[in-house]
Length: 102
Image (tube, rainbow, N blue to C red):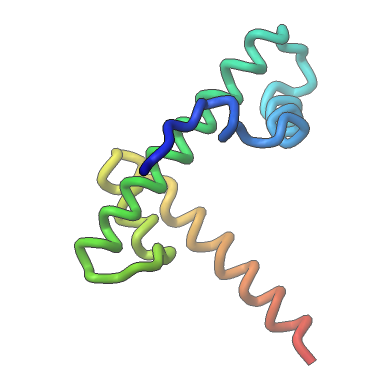
């Protein structure tokens, strides 16, 4: 049996959202309800992107969502301009991890 999950149970950590808001608004303050709205929007976006990527993985006969599924999902939802930045960030993280490995 599948249980319905309330959006409040899925929300991203508030301190992470507040940091993002501060960095993107040059320190300007947001009202509490505006922070809540941003948090919910971010949660919906991540859920939507993940569900779209899961569809890509399933269509490819795979059980695990990979980076390429996310890139395709970004194209599907009209956010393809973000793919080069995300690829670059992922490659940077991989290189960092490889440099830490003994």
